[in-house]
Length: 286
Image (cartoon, rainbow, N blue to C red; front, top):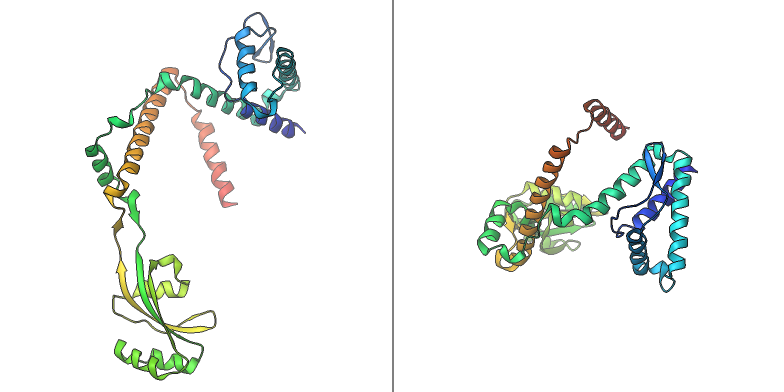
C-alpha cells in the first residue's frame, strides 16, 4: 500500500512540474528533518493557480475557492506522508528528489546555461563537426545479389557443382525448377540469415555454395557492395547544424554541473557507490 501511495504522490508531483519556485512565509513545524509550512503565501497560491489553469483536468473550474481547496488537499496528503514516515523510504525520497531537481532545472536554466543562438554556428563549424563525427552520419552498407533457387535437391546439387558464373547461368537455363532472382542493393539485415552469412564471405562477382532457407535451396552471387557510405553533407547541413547546437548545449551543461558539484562539494560515499555497482552487476547476471 505504501508503494501505491508513493506512485500516486509521484504522479501528482510530475503533473505539477511547471509550478514556479516560491518562498513560504510564516512559521513552521518539523516533521523529522523537514520543515512543514503552516501558511502559504500569495506567490505560492498564484503559482498553483497558474499551473492549474493550464491543466486539462482543471479546465473551467479554477476559482479562488477551488484552488484553495486543492492546495489544502495536497498539503494534507503531504503531511499524512510525513506522519507515516514516507520520507524515510528510498522510493519516496527518490520521487521527491527527482521532481525537485527537474523543477529547479527549468527554473535555474537561464542562470546556469546561457542561450546559444543557432545563427552563431557557421558553415565551417558545421563542416568541422561533420568530419570529426563522421560515424554519426554513416549509412548502412548495401549489397546487390543474384539468387538461383529451387525446391529440388537434385537441381540444387547441379547448381552447387557449377564451375563459375557462366556455368551456373547455363545450368539455370537447363533446369526447369530453377528460378533466378536479381535483388536490388539493400542492407545486410534484410537478407535471410543464411544468405547474409554467404554474402559477407563473397567478393564481387563470386558465387557461394548451396544454402537452405525455409524449404528452398539457393546459390547466391554477389553483384555489388556499397560500403563506407555517409550522408550527403549539403543535403543534411541544416540537420548537422542542429547537432552542433545540441553538442554545445551538452558541453555547457557538463561544465555547469561540474561547477555546481565543486561549489557545493557534492559527492556520493565511495563505499555506497561501490556496493551499488556490485548489486547492479549481480542484477544483470541474474
